[in-house]
Length: 110
Image (cartoon, rainbow, N blue to C red; front, side, top):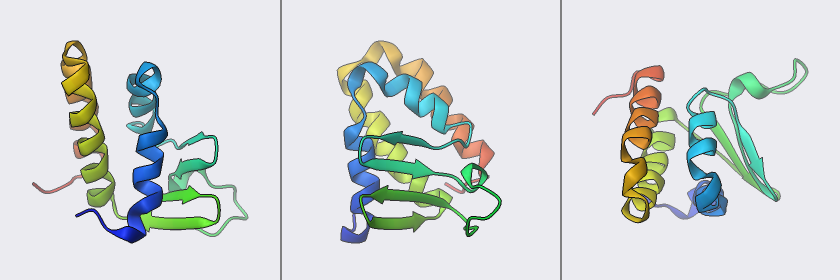
């Protein structure tokens, strides 16, 4: 599924350091965005009243922006989580809970 136009999504997950990974993905699982240096993830609920609404999750790297649907967001989140737990298997239970929460929150299909 990795596509060039999704580069801001990949850049966002790559910008998360190992020591903050669990906290950030737990934060994202609540539907609240997060920014790391020049890359950020924004959910519709993060918007101010005067900002243009959107459906999905907005990722931005400098001026490069892409809005992905929740299934695509989950795909990249799952890939990042799988990579993380290969290095930190002790966090597998927590990461599995985060993925379950996101899956249920957005009523995703298998």
